[in-house]
Amino acid sequence: MEHLALYRKYRPKIFDEVLGQDHITKVLESSVETNKVSHAYLFVGSRGTGKTSVARIFATSIGVSVNDLYEIDAASNRGIEDIKELRNGVRVLPFDSKFKVYIIDEVHMLSKDAWGALLKTLEEPPKHVIFILATTELHKVPETIISRCQVFTFKKATETILKKIILDVSKTEGYELDAGSAELLAILADGSFRDALGELQKILNFSSKDTKGKKIIKITREDVEKLTGAPKTTLVNDFISAIAKKDLEKGIATVKIASEANLDMKLYFKLIIQKFRMAIILRYAPKLKDEMVGDLSGEDIEFLESLVKEDHEGMLRSPALATLLEAYQDMDNTFIAELPLELALVKIISKE
Image (cartoon, rainbow, N blue to C red):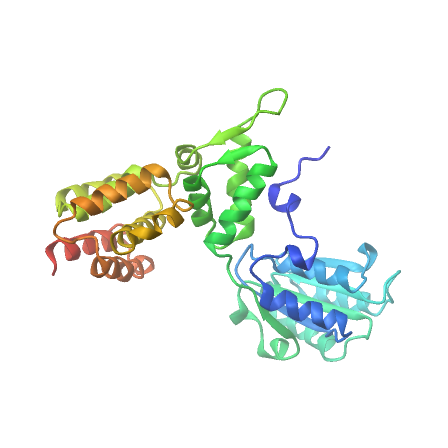
């Protein structure tokens, strides 16, 4: 039996299974129910947000069979000859459906001549043809094309949604992840459903089951850190601890260790901000501790509680978090990856 990738195995099959895109699925469902289907749609959004999945579901919901559904990758079929071939194909009536649906992925990759050829088809499309164009780069799509499509913008998946998917799929596959592991994988996915399940598959493939396949395999955050190359919890904790204790040397040394380990500094910074935020919540709203159990491991909560208790100078407060957030925005504009983190550290501790 073919071993399916998790993102394919758990791809949504109906609108109700699509998460985080209600502003799109509700409109499409309504258009199907009222028989007000457009001839052209443009799905916009970052990678792994469900554009192709929703396109397939929409095609199925209007009764399009496999024989009348065509998927084209514009990255490898971007020339005018490819579009001319498509134009010839759209004139042919559907095999066994009311409509023929053409899903053109990465449509922004089309050449200038190909855009011109496609535009002619969109201007006067046959009644039996529906185009669904998908792109991650809307700014590369000509206005003449955009104006002839219904445009839907897909949102990045929230970390809460990704975490739930990761935990649900892990359980179904016979594995148990702790809260910290699922949270880290959700952060690594950066809003992409596909990336979330791709990272999870990497972990599950390494954590093999017993011969009978019945034993539940537990996966810890340490396992995830090791297999994904994500920053270790200790490096995050040490940086926050350096702020709480006003230990500039320790903070700089911690950043140096992270840099020498060739870690993704932006991800490292993001994990620091996330945990720093949790420390502030524990300081100002300790009654929310029970609600935070789902986001942090017991060890993390104990660490933060201890740090907050010992923070007599009030270093773990909102001004410091604001400084970290401001520095995070500069990560993409520096040729020294660790510099914004070091500058933020100096600013917070020296209160410049």
